[in-house]
Structures are given as C-alpha cells and as structure tokens.
Length: 151
Length: 371
Image (tube, rainbow over all chains, first blue to last red; front, top):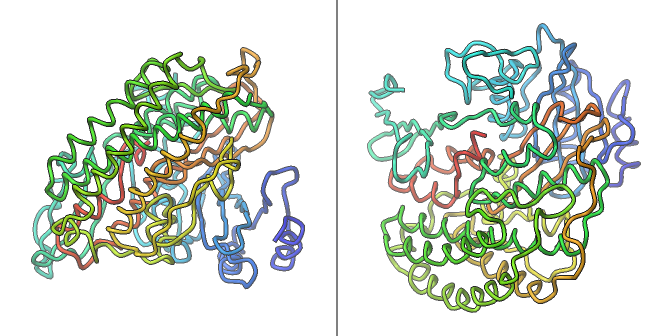
C-alpha cells in the first residue's frame, strides 16, 4: 500500500485524522482515548496488518510528552509512525503489550526513563534503574549532580 | 537481588544466573523459577552496564555522538557507527562518495564475520566444547589486525563519520583481506566438521528453544534470531542501503525455529559475508573517501530514522532535531533488547542446561541491550 492509499485508509478509521507532512513515512497523530481501538484496527485489519512494532519511545517536549510507535508490516511491507500526545503532569496511556509482545519491554523502558505510565501493563517496573531510583533520567528537567550524564 | 533467592509458595526454586557468570557473557542477570530442573519462568534484570547513552548524546554534537555508539554493541561497532552516519547524512542530505560506500560495506561485512566468529566460539563453549573458542579467536585476530591497520583500533573503531569514512584504507588492506578470505574459506568448512555435524552438539541444539514465526514478529525479533524462525527481515535486502542493492547475496532463512536453525543461519551468513567481500574487494572505486562537509553539522528541524543490519539484527537510529548542533532526542533501537524479550517465551518448559544453549543462539551483547 503506498502512502496515499494508506492515508486514505487511516482517515476512515479516525474521527479527526491529523497527519504530519513532509515525513519519510506516513505519520499519524492519534488521540490518547482512541489509541487502543486504533491499535487493534491497524494490527488486525485486512490490508493494514501492521504486525511488527520495531521501535517504541517517548519524547519529552517540556509542555507535553509524545509516545512514538514505529510500525511495519511483514506481509505488506508498508510503514507507519503513530504519535500519541500525553499530558506532562500525568502521562498515562494504555499498554499495547497484549497486541505486540515486544511492547512489554519497550514500555518498561519508557516508564523507567520518562515516567510514562502504561495502564494494564503486566509488569510495569523499573528496567535499567534500580527500584529505589528517584526521578526520570531522560526527562529534560532531570538533574543528578552525583551521577552526571550531561557533559 | 539477593532476597529473591528461595522458594515460592508453590515450592518452586528461584535461582539467580549472573550478573557474574561465564555463560551470560557480560553482566546479564536472570532470575529463574525452577520446578525441579524445568524452567517455569525467566526474568531478565537489566541495567548493570546502563550508561544512559541516549541522554549523553543529547549534549554531544553530531560528529561526537558517533564515538559513544561504538560502546554499545562493541562487536558491531562499525555497523553502529554506520547507522548513525547514515541518519545524519539523511538529515543533511549529504551524498557519500562511491569509494566510501564500498569501504563501508567491506568494513561492515568484516565486522559481521568477526562477530559471528566470536559468537560461534562462545556458543560452542557454552554447550561444553572448549576448542572452537580458540579456533574462532585465531581467525578473529586476523580481522582485528586488518581493522587496526586501517582504523587504528581493534574494537571501538569510530571509523565511519558523516560524509564517508575517517581515513582512506591502508595500502595493505586489499592484499591482507584477500589473504584472509583465502585462509578463512577453508576454516568455515573446518568449523562445520568440528561442531556442526557433531552428534553431541546436535542433540544439545535440536528441538530446543522453539520460536514460531508469529512469536518472532510479535516479540520484535530481528537478525538471525528471526531468520531462524523463517521470518524475512534482512534490512540489507528489504531496504538496501549503500551498495547492498547491487550485490548478489542471499538472505539466509531457516524455518526450523529452534536453536539449531539459528545456529545454521549464522553459519551460512558467514559464507554470504565472504561472498560479499569477494565481490567488492577488487572493485573499490577510485576517488574521495569523504564528502566535503562543514566543520559544524546542523541538522534541520525534523525527525530522521535510519535502519541498518548488524550482526545481531536491526539497529535503528531515531534522531529528533530542533535545528541545533546537538540532537534534541536520540533513540537507539538495539537488536539485542528485543531479542532478549523473547527469551522467557523460548525457555519455558526446557531444562536449565538448555537455557544456556538458547542464550548462546540469541547472541546477546549486554552493553547493546543496556545502552
């Protein structure tokens, strides 16, 4: 499916579709509440079948967070980037680890480094940091004078 | 986590493997729940070598950050550097000279050979064969010498820079690579004779650690791990970069799904790498080895993603730029991280001795997972 067809197909799935222009791959912004339904649609719908989540990460934009999902399909070989905007004070989003198993580790990583909470995650704990670690290291306002990571 | 040793309510034994254990090849810590000798659950504990490389990169310039990436997957440092250089080049629309492209691919394939050799030796050692380790290191040493001559380093090369490669190849490079290839062709057959057909080895590997194609995709496995389950995922074939599109080589796929399939994929990949090197070594174009770039690189505002195939699978570099001289956010998608997440799924129901074999065929490099 080429970019135009994919865009047309996705427009049918979302109430108010918003696409980012000028990107290498089709990039769609999805609302936090509609995310779970949308995720199931793109995973299982005939013709879309994005079965392979190859990258999941979060970005701290100081005013808000975005969680960025990179998908591809091993059947159709098309690509899709999904972005979900989250509140900075309470970043909470539904897990997709029941749809793509790889998300389990990636979401734990995003939780560990950004403090993004994934609801219904089977095992949401710190991954790299110790359990008693304070703060979220990859946030822009994180300062740690003891373990300096800024140069 | 010492408090986790003990027995559960169901009477299962909980033991710790690592972080200091010869078969975990680095500081991987696994908490294993056992019923008798049978594995019920494997839980990896990570972070013993976490350096927060992504945060560090946020305060490094686009020329500097590539040096840090050599320290992630130290067995594929060329390929890590390559992925980062590609991402910066994509953002700045730098056209890389033909000579640099070929040198890069040659270096990538030599790295892949060296990495697979080390894996082969270590993996055989894990299942009880000590000799292959010395064979593998002997051959790997020749590659390291070739690298040292051109790049000045044996492990963290930092040879690929945005725009090309840091320096031209050493005058001896072609001669020595050809010598090595001639020597190594006979050695791969020796590897097969020594280990692949060995009946004890086969019985340790066959039918162990099955990973179905569906699970491999769902767990985001890449590289030989996924290709051993019959999933086509070689970035070099699917999304060719540099000169890979013009080369004739095969994507090795084995639909067996078990440890032996993953083993065979890597063995065949070594032969493919040798073939790629043979195709290129006499055809290095003349010309510049580096494009002219500005001293200070500035990426335009936007997002850039590059994908390359390391010895362990797909390595992705995701740069978000705000238009400055340093990245706003950088994410490294490391192959080992996703491959490790499938370990629990593969190991359940097997004996504890098989866990070491399964880990061996995953080819884990811990700094690559922890970053």
